[in-house]
Image (cartoon, rainbow, N blue to C red; front, side):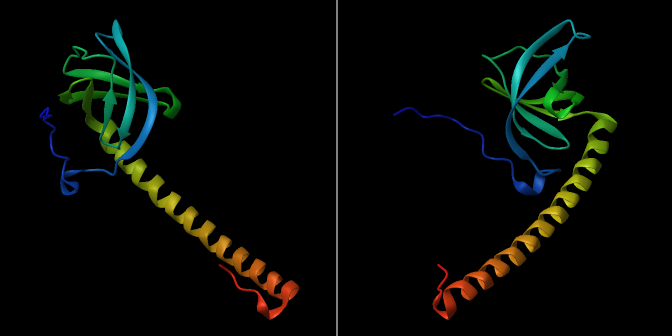
Length: 142
């Protein structure tokens, strides 16, 4: 039996921002863009990201992370290396500003989703009433 060492998951209390799991292409670059490698973002938050790379790359401690589908370009510091994966922390004002924007986006998304839930509940009630009207009082919903 092989003993595989894994690091324990980071406690929720230590996380500074909510994480989103995803699979999205990214480009990492350093040396004023002279060097780079493609990666896949597997987790992202306002303050950092978890990236999977081909093989075990030799990255410098500071890189640029570009995620074209999100129009994101941020400077980052590599904080953890594990096999072909790296965790980066976004640097400076970019991280603080992004955290504020992400928080505002989350609140707006929650507000929109709550509105959609209310609309769907009303639609459900209307359809149930229509079924009762068509089929009489013997209609039983599952």
